[in-house]
Image 1: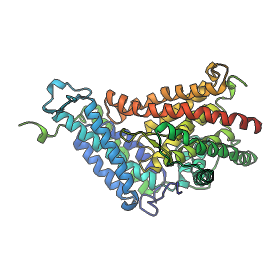
Image 2: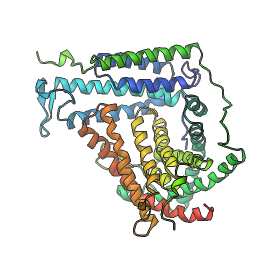
Image 3: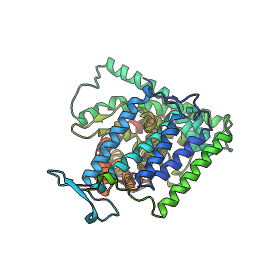
Image 4: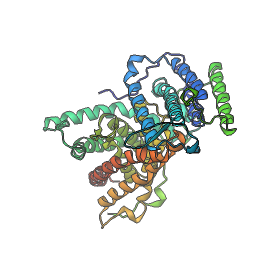
Amino acid sequence: MVVTPRYLGRGSWLARRDPRVPILVGVMAALGVIQVWDARIVAVLLALAIAYYGTARIPWGSVRRQWAFALTFVSLLVVLNTILTTGEISGLDPTTFHTLFTLPLIGTKVSSESLSYAATQMLRFVTFIAVGFPLAYAIAPADLGVALARLGIPGKFAFGVDLTWRFMPSLAADLQETVDAQRVRGYDWDRGGGPIARLRRSVPLVVPLTMNAIVGAEDTIDAMDLRGFGTAKRTWFRHLAFDRADRLVLLATFVLFVTITVLGFSGNAKLFVFPFLLPS
Amino acid sequence: MTTTMDRSRLWDVSSRVIVYAAIGAALYGVLGFLINVPIPGSNNVSVRPAFALVPFFGWAFGPIAGLFTGLVGNALLDQLSGYGGLTAWNWSIANGLVGLLAGLFVATPMATVLGNKIIGAAVIGVLATIIGLLFVFTDIVVFGNSFQAALTGSYGFVVVPDVIAAAILVPILAAAWEPLKASLGR
């Protein structure tokens, strides 16, 4: 049972960057993309996001399933959003829409505007994901704690994140051990039944695993107390320093973020209706 | 049984709180990744038993541990599934709020319902889930979803299975933890 973050981008250009770079790029991308509804601008951002994704050199075969899952999930969200809004778009007057057809039974009016909105929403999601994957796969797990601490996150919180990563492999092994032990006693997770029955069947796994983890944590707490945890500002063994390429990436991302923000606030990033969708 | 948690200790960030918080987040990530119960006929909606750990850790170890368990655990789960820990950052905050609220509710008379701390834990778990997850309505701003889509597609989809998980598993975990807590001298 392997439940550790996979460092698939190891050795890539992005992985050689200071680990604060992908975090800051991710934050600026998340805050920037949500301001834009013009598909042309989002398309440019998506192209940049894909180029950025490429620098992480994440093997396609290793993340194919994750991409399939993410794309399926966001496609469902976009379709659901379009159907549930009954063709309306927040902030726009539906009487000005160009209705193309009406969905039978549910009566949702599908217009040039709602289709453009759905397409833009999809592009935004894919941009998020393209920037999100390198966060998951191109930061060395051991660097995350120190990166957060150097970004100004309180030291104890950053240490907690570091500790979380370190606990995962042993907890996954404990879970496997618990599953095996319960199977010897006749436990069968796949026995069928409804969601509630299956939820109740998770109790023999969740409860012992959780209680064992809590009891086992006492040793870690004692070790930390004996070393005076929290009595002074924490230092980290790993030293982080931005190099020239890091600064350039951050500067370019920041300039892009400011540009998007200006476009957004000046009303130049509103919904763009694809001309080919407009009835002639 | 004591009725409420000592208010002055709610915001302590000791080594104990940090370690329990990290354990909670790691457990949420590992169990959430490996164990989920799909709801038949729904669109990719699952009951995640691991979600119950969020209100439980808040209830048992305070609001800081609860906040951390939900916030970091959900981001970790998204990282493990490859979605990226920051992609749905508002959902991680929503999960964190559930743990935070569970920890805060312990310092209120809600901690004991009908003279029973375990029933109180269940009520706290359910209420914290219903209120904390309201933060997913920020999908309207973050992802451009409509209110209807946020209500039914985001909040409705997640709150029902998570309330079920909290209602069933939080009291069971609380009942297992109470005697253990006493034996650990806590």
